[in-house]
Length: 304
Image (tube, rainbow, N blue to C red; front, top):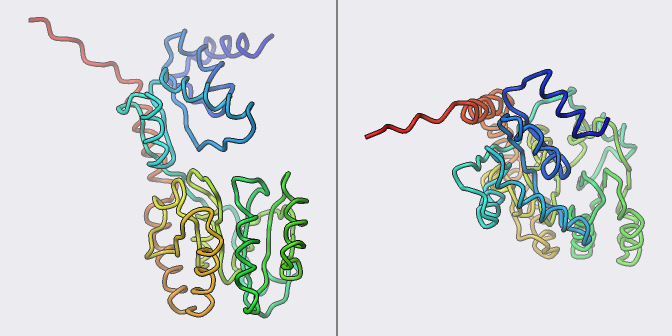
């Protein structure tokens, strides 16, 4: 049985009130099945990575498909503005940032460093994510060139298709001795206490979960002002820099290095904001309200 036929059979048997999709194929192809059965459809948009021509084509088709959904949930205000430009009806677009829920207790600073296999002493920059162009690990490497006068080290946690080119870049820039490449680390969020500053250098983002993990760990944050990041942290909670700007990134890291007390105060405010604004309970309530909205019949027109 094909995917669409199986989905049609499933919808007829389960009779769901709503079908919620994520991803290219479900949004573009499979969502037509419940729609033809009269079932409201909802999707969540996490962001657009761009990339090669095939990926850009998929994203273009996806943005057109959003016009047919009963509700489109986006994880940031910039995504909402983008979909309005793509002619998705504004009254169907709802901003619901991602939520954070702790999965395992974090390590303390010394345990985290021992588990990562790095020195218990010294100032350490942390970077966590997929090694792909949009995540901007190369921008951190470029920033390190402007920080060679400081005794610091870097932990890069993650893997991806850009790993070899990043290794080559670090060597070419002369900063390879400062960097420890950890690869994929299970339960990476538990290790954030190992860092004196967490750097998010992405070129594009939705609402990054890794930012929540840094906030939960009470670690000072330096982040590019991209996507939904300003919806999560302001200048009161992190140092925000222009995107794709290694010089500004280096200056922000230097600021944290020389002003640890101020950086710590920002980190404490970031954690407090996380626990107030981005926990699971209000997130569930927002989704529940949207599901009720799309399943509530419109009032009948009054005849005059």
